[in-house]
Length: 110
Image (cartoon, rainbow, N blue to C red):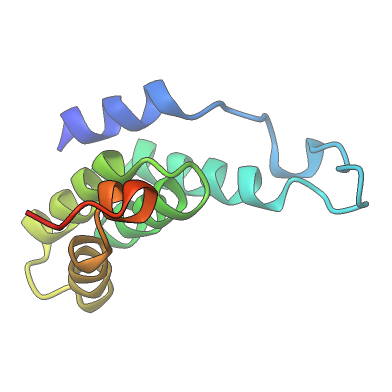
């Protein structure tokens, strides 16, 4: 599991304290970055926390489009807690998404 956390630490930026974000052009604070920071902090305390691993997987998937990283987070969560419903659901959904080839070029799925 340390490997998964090391991967996460290498792919996300620490933004400082959650209250230190600057506002975006549309006036929203950096809530997404703040959420990632909160889960990273949780993983510093317990690198095998399945809830934090699952939440970070979702951030990697939805915000960073890092599907391989998200899969690693979901699998790490399931290694700790094999019946974690959200990790199971997210991993299942991740595996059932259309291939990038199909979406981009209309290639048949293999």
